[in-house]
Length: 639
Image (cartoon, rainbow, N blue to C red; front, side):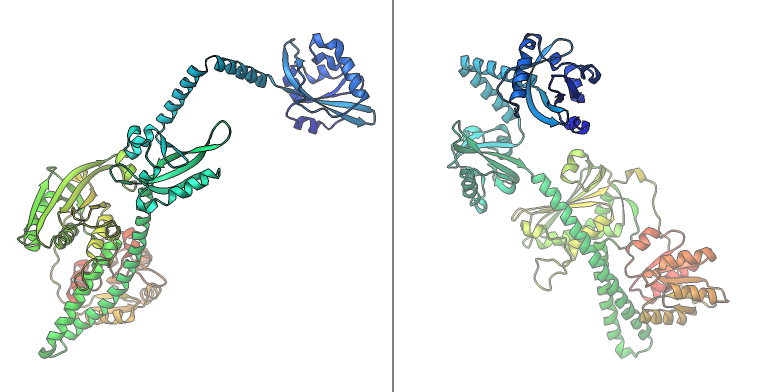
């Protein structure tokens, strides 16, 4: 007996027959093919599966095979048929394999139904006969159908001979490149390649002549109107009836939009990384400026009048440094904001009074409001900074004067718009467009304009932070910024800010701060990991009457407050400290001292303050700070 597992592994019907022609084994494929059960077949003569017209001679064939047994493979050319249980016949191929066992020789027959193949062969035969009878008409119809299939493709399908001369041009190619078939057929394929890519064509044709395919390589091609497109291209040889290579078929897909999306993603990731770096630099620099500013405040009343000029110079330099760090923090989107619900149109009307002297008499300023209400939720000072920075940039691009156009409008971002701008959420946006008719920018400059410290101005003429600041503010406000520019044709910045018209009436009001009086009997816990900054801050507080307990970090602050027997009125803590952050310290303290008042101070808030928020009476004091800022903030918090 043969292994049942082996028989079942055979994909065709498999039957084991002994020397007397009796079926002794059959697999499940035999049941499916002949419609007999295994029990019905085993013990029966093999002729039960042979058409009745051939049964009379079949036993002679068996006897002849047993006399001269040898393997007979399928495809021997014999015209064989099988018979199902219901009497229907079907064409088969049969392989015979003699197998010697302890009980004598048996034959393993593997039977394959070739009905589909016979039907296809018959259909092909008939088709060939029909094709011979009506060859010309059928060939023309086939060519028309093939042409319809090719023309229905949105990809460009182009045929060319081995010299690179275009011989076929489908509708997809016409849509992509702009040439009609009549215009382009007969011209060299190099017509579509920009000069810097012309060397690609001979290399491709060389590979085609040797019978090789060129698959899915990315290149640049040029349209009839001069636009450059990113294309994914595959080229295959075309063979004639004798197998000779006579040309090439090109399938090209326009991937310009896809490449644009990839570039936007890479640029976004790059700007995010640069922003984190800029924020880190600003944090460290603000701490240094905080020390300088605090020392200056303490020195102001300790030097003679003849030295006040130098003190004022130090203060002014500190202010300029603080301004630079604020721009860096704005770019890194870590700068705390005070947002209001405001109408951009009203804000721009107020801003226009500042813009006229800023731009000069040779620049015409035009304000266009294309919507009566343009409600956004933003920091009004940051909106002013956006407009001023873009206006200054425009003025520099118009050395001989020109026109500055500031427009507002409402735009709805739908799925079709988002296909080109995938980072934008669906919904209503207020659009602020700032345009000039200045010198414009080339592509190399345009892709870098938002990088911190990148500038095209002469040394000493600019910091390279103006547009970087605009970028950071827009992103921090949940918006998007786009730039359109060409050399000699001016520049347009388009800023999309989420519409806040649904929040009308939810207006944030700022509270006026009273001038601080001297505080006696008020105890402050000061947590600051920079020893110099901690010492200077303590000095300023003590000179105003405060009692100060120092802690070098969050953990030390917990130890101080737990060991203190007196009342602590307020915690003044840095945001970012080694070991335990300021917000983590505050959360620990509020568990045991729920009425404790808190003021944060930091040169770089990061996501820590953002995640904690500025609610619940918690205030943020930005480094570097003046003595009066420190005292007013504490006074307002203490009440």
